[in-house]
Image (cartoon, rainbow over all chains, first blue to last red; front, side):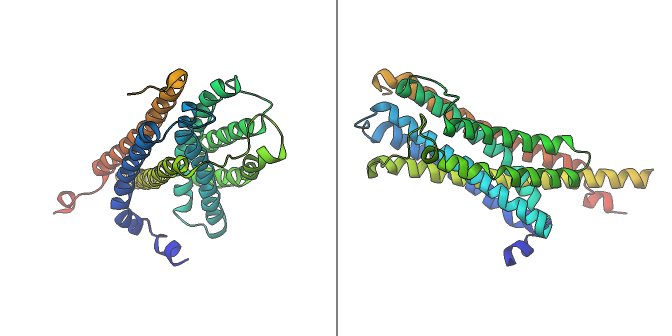
Length: 238
Length: 52
């Protein structure tokens, strides 16, 4: 609560976030590169799936992150609706394109892994695949609402409501492999040497998400301030 | 160096797409910050403007 009220002032946020934004972005890129190196060159092929399992090192962390980003947006939307926090809408709006990007990455890499493993790029009857696709469309819909509404206030309210409604999809995605016996297998128990690069890439994605969200929030605040000053100047000059 | 048997094209394509998405998101975010900063600097009253 104290942190929330401290950052209620965008000036304080701008002053405190600059180095975190660039620092987390740089850290994320470096950690992802380390994870990719481990995944491509250090870890031996999987006993069952062979080298195709290396795709998991970029696919699985992307799937974790797309759920996490959405959960972050749900939290921000709740804060926006309940407490009307000035930065909550900005945070959710800034996170959405990153969430859409990692969801697309998860879908595409999953499809590429699926072809040599399952013999198909896509299966419409699979609950996990379709529910993640729905999540991708929710991200797109959320971003479209921000562009479509007349005022930022209306857009923020409508986008927050859509975000909360879309939260029902998160448990569906998570439990889909248990509730529906379709193509996608349940989570595998991987060996420690196999988990290690996956966790490294996941940490890298997480740091990158933090950095990019802060960068986009900063851009959003600067754009809003520039528009406000332009309007004020227009009123003064008539 | 990048030899993964019959899975080579699948593995490399996946990592290539991951690189494109990560680089794309970073470049897009950095460009947004640079453009927003330029826009704000162009309109924000500077000390020079405020001087009598």
